[in-house]
Length: 359
Ligand SMILES: Cc1ncc(COP(=O)(O)O)c(C=O)c1O
Image (cartoon, rainbow, N blue to C red; front, side):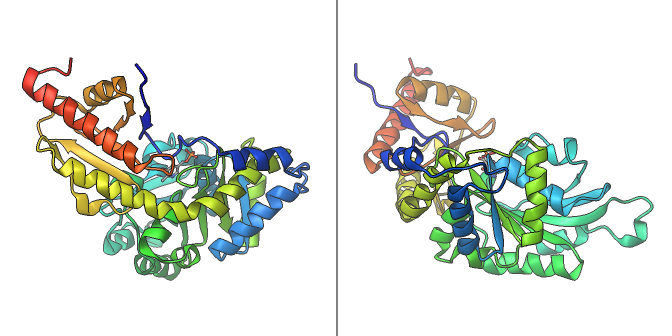
């Protein structure tokens, strides 16, 4: 039986296109640790321009980019960072800011839209009066789009408000913008405007934009100079890295314009899931390329079981919690794939409801 695969686990699963592979093959390269790879320089210059920051640095992953950024801002022992309780840095990066950086996280509750309440952020800032006991707040981190909230976008106005508080208290603001291009397209606001209040940001090229590898951090020249040393410390100095930057540059040139269509397909998907009464989804919360849905009666089927049975039909998805499933769209998923996956989900749910099992 010929079976198709619809891989909805993440937007990190895209395969490099022929254009990316061709660009990698012909990339002009040199030793980037020595600062002389022209293709890395080209990509970094372009990223600095897009983000409105002085300088940029290519790093192997979003995780390393966030870690470096936090460590540059929190270079004094006993530093504390204010961070969302469901943020990627806090939940999904192995606690690297603490285990490697010695930075203490002070979590603030993330709202369903990915924001943290402004008054709660301000209340989380440590008073200098307690410095004998407290860590010292040095940084606030935001995430845009906010992955664990379903890819919700933070507005420029909200980010500005957080930036204002940071400034008022002498703190820095870092934005985990792994999917900032999705936010920019969904909000119709340029990336540089969304990052205006930030002292630094991480942007991923290997998510919705489809590059095989790579992220970039941006900030002031002084920030990037420190970041470069830390990248080397962490083993992220890569020699002829232009091979990777060439593919990332193609992703940047060709794929930003495809994100709008990913968001459209995500809405079709969400609307389709809404019709399945055994599932629960807030379709209005689908703003970009992510869809989270819950199983109304998870005693009937667990998200893990649902994903296993879907995998047998070639539809790959990931449980997000003990009651919910996450689906992520990217440009290598067609509208037809969306309808196919929806049909599979409907059939599986129906079988389980009717027979008590999907077999
Ligand atoms: C919001 C967010 N930030 C950071 C990262 C880390 O990126 P990487 O997987 O490249 O380390 C991810 C990964 O999915 C993410 O979703």
